[in-house]
Image (cartoon, rainbow, N blue to C red; front, side):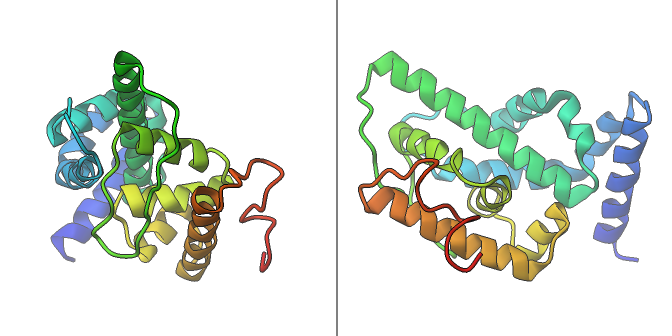
Amino acid sequence: MAGSELDTGEVTRLLKAAREGDGAAMERLVPLVYEELRRIARRQLSHELGERTLNPTGLVHESYLKLGQGAMLARDRAHFLAIAARAMRQVLVDSARERKAAKRGGGAWERVTLTDGAQVEACDPDRLLALDEALAKLAPRHRQVIECRFFGGMDEEEIAEAMGVSARTVHRDWIKARAWLYRYFYSGEQAGPHGTHPERGEGS
């Protein structure tokens, strides 16, 4: 069995041990996924423009503190990384709010581009907050797909494993969610709860 497969199995075992009350399990787990967490952190930070208050190591540590007991809800390695990616995004959103408040910036909407490739358009604080507000209007499953792919850099197979669905479902959700976000930012409608929603739009 390859080393990565051994690590994956050990992560699952340690998560189970943590849920069962082993207080040291999470401490033993973190080194097994640390480099992957740093990879996700580097990707998330690459979206930011302007002054950065965190480096990848700092973002990993801040997000781990934010995770708290929520980390133990993960079923396996892929699910843990998906939860960690969301926590990192929340740390960056909180940081963006603080920076915007300090500068007393306006509430203008900025365009945000989501692409299939590894290269994505960088986001300044206004764009990051605009995207966060838009994501809050998505159905939970579609939001998680965007978080895992855009922020976490996970491929469809990894996302499917983390979410417990098929890769085909992930691919369909990604297309629907991205199309909805495109309309949200570019149509000028600022669609809310009564607008076209990926869960309720055509083809659902």
